[in-house]
Image (cartoon, rainbow, N blue to C red; front, side, top):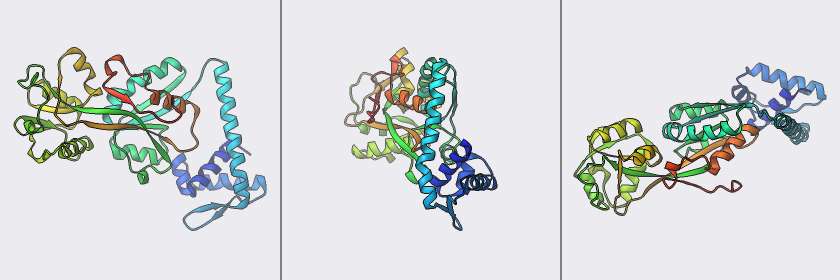
Amino acid sequence: MELDQLRTFLLAAELQSFTQAARRLSFSQSAISQQIRDLEDRLGVRLFERHSRSVSLTPAGEILRPRARQILDEVERATEALSEFRGLPQGVVRIAASTSPGIYLLPHALGRFSEAYPGVRASLEVPGQDELVHMLQQGDLDLAVVEENLLPSRVFGWEKLPALEDEIVLIAPPDHPLVGKGPLAPETLAEVPMIMRPPENPTRQVIHNALASAGFNPGRLRVRFEIGNTEGLKRAVLAGLGLGFASSYAIASELEHGTLVVLPLAGVTITRVIWLVRPAKQRSPMPERFADLFLRGEWLPANMHGLTRRVDVPGTV
């Protein structure tokens, strides 16, 4: 009985499908079926009932399932203990993030993680939302960090934990005429050129919803430019092309150096949650350590303190 056979058995039992297990492991379905047959031959019992589009555990499979999980957990604990004994924790952590967290947050967290575990290699990708969801569905990632609260149907088998609360603020160059005028009435936004993200962008939807809740019709915004990323939007604001909305953590450096300022809006607070996405089950030790570090928020640099607030998650304090 091989460990890979037990891992395949558990994954197929969780997904109730040899086909889905094959996709998650990047194997052919025939290879998965052969592993299960070999395990059944080795144990002398049938573990799965085969249906036309799914599989289900037999009573023998139900008996094996918790014992297989216990065996693999024990192997992982032993491997981790020996690695720590040598002082050389090893492994790979595969992470993907939506654009703003991937650019402005994850490098700081990865830097702190690499200091603690120099033998662990981490990879970070910043794909579009559809590609990120596809990577989760295919099992190509250990963790993800996103701004959007992804629909459960799109990330089945993964759990979402609120990690940070981020405020989206109105920004301007320091010499703008409205700087120093105190909190601005939302109506002011109908009188000045604005730089916004494209209409389909989730952040723009969050901004529109907050303005509408404050009684301002977002259709009255004088949108002069639409720019698809935060860096481009910041550059346009710095060039004096208009006012814009940006994440607090994305402008931390500009605020620190005084090249951008925040214009408060009276009666309007725009917040969103940064989510950590991790497997609901069968978590590996090193990704779990990174997840714990990220949720604790101790990696936040000094210039982000007060701009991004950690959201308490049970078991992380």
